[in-house]
Image 1 (cartoon, rainbow, N blue to C red):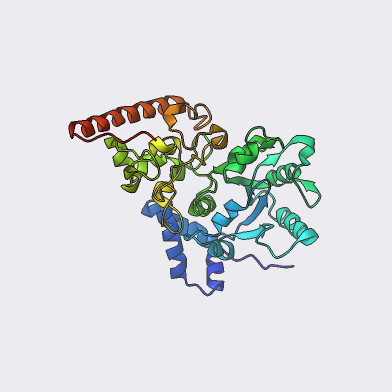
Image 2 (cartoon, rainbow, N blue to C red):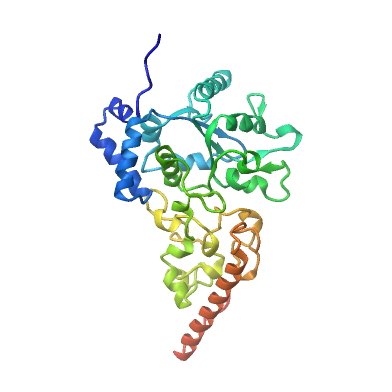
Length: 362
């Protein structure tokens, strides 16, 4: 009888030549990323140390590989640390060496051995018409693959806005009848990690949290509140300029050069829930607003059909879709637009009182 068991997460670290100290540093850094209190950080280390590496199946459907590209650029934990030390990535048609029948056989074998326990990650939307004929892998439709894999999953993680909400494939006129993961496997625990693409550490952090504590607290869109609990506007470093009524009116005017708020250039930060302003990208180097471009709202449902990327929220183009399900999106949009208008008038009044000519409208 074969009594050999799979190594625990701690043993996997040690097999890679890393010490227990390195493992504890990994747990502490991950706990910091998740903003866990000290007691929970110790609990995370204890749980990961004693558990075997869980099987992860990563399925890619109607997507551009941008979400996986983002994941490969995670700095804490890094993708290689996640794959070699924390999880057992049994299938990913981009990263794996196997192809064709060998790859599909490996996926089926891994699912069979870990049935009911593995984590299923889905990247991309899923077309439904014609029995899913518009997206086929290994002779099976994405629709069939998803439903079969979801049956045996402990949880389903929808990575990226295409998987979470349908994304660009779902946009009008939606010629392939694309749908989101939650529309098709609503009876399974689904965690949405939206974004086009998502922040890499949000992906890895959510996976590690699930391994230690199970499904995290989710918002109305099934997104982890630890990463999607506040709007980008709430934490944006340009927020003080918004409050003072200082707005860039074009991408090359004085306001833009001085780093003023991009609200009037169409920034959707006030109604977009994500951690971009705090976690940023490329190991905390920057994020779109810091680079001079307004937020597109890519982590919200229907962001593409909302249109008007360069029209302010007060224009009314983003009603209904952005923040749909939160129950206050439309009211919030009107309130924000009104506040911006008041702030703009205050700014113009200050300029006029100072004897300066107001800037020309773009």
